[in-house]
Length: 382
Ligand code: F6P
Image (cartoon, rainbow, N blue to C red; front, side):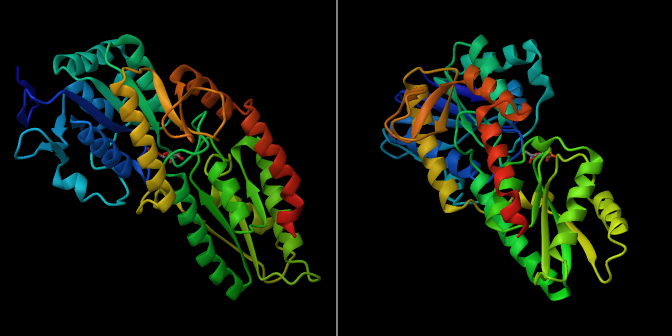
């Protein structure tokens, strides 16, 4: 029997000879590498003669049944290939399918509508590419719906549990490092201090890693839980020490995560007031914001997207559900192995538990990061 998928503005008929059909969606804040993951999901599925539909606008599109075909049937009607738009994705940033944060998905009736869309079309599985909110949505859906659901972690914040890195992190860090190099050129020329704010509402990972890579003089992370006064004092001290006459520094770079509780422009004002006795010291700020979320995916994000895509498609086709693929070390015994020694499957419930611990600072990973940052603070300041 032929399956038909109808949406408000598209419809098409899927060949009866094709074995199965899976769906893929992207959700939450976009991240470089999402498109590479869509491409990987489509290519791997097509190679297994499984058709793929993309869901537009994340969970919103799933509730509304907004699907589009991502594979096409070749002339002999036996083999499949990606549609031209998927072929042409290359390493493009953003997401071909669009993405939303979907408050409706918190409500059970919306998830029931989403499940009905999946079962009604005879879908064999769903791959969800997104951040921690998207993984929470995937877990809720998998718990209530008979269709296998597998997640692929994608968030520049690197705040998803049980994966060394999520898609987008590497590209975002490369962008930050390049921006800081440029800012350092002008800072050195004018003997200035710069405070650079990077994304990370709850997670300081981008700030922490980029501070090491750019040899920043100080770093401010939400996980440090400093008071407003402590934040202002630490930046004042870092600039005062760095520009002390005995030193030969021409640039001071402070990297601040978005989630630190002093707005960057206020921080600059307060620090300048406290440094008014130091002649000729100017403090400037740059908020990198969404600039860091766009851009072509790096080699590492593209490679990771390919590896995640392969493991995720094979998992849903094997009937695995309520799991996320994660990047781990070979030999790790947590989770379930895949054909790739670096990629394992973890129950979404455990992923969400570890994600909460990462964000509230109780995770061993966060504690270790904070300990190591504390230990190198003096080296950064040199
Ligand atoms: O993708 C995560 C994130 O980049 C956070 O670091 C940031 O606070 C948030 O997204 C911004 O999201 P929005 O684009 O919805 O403002």
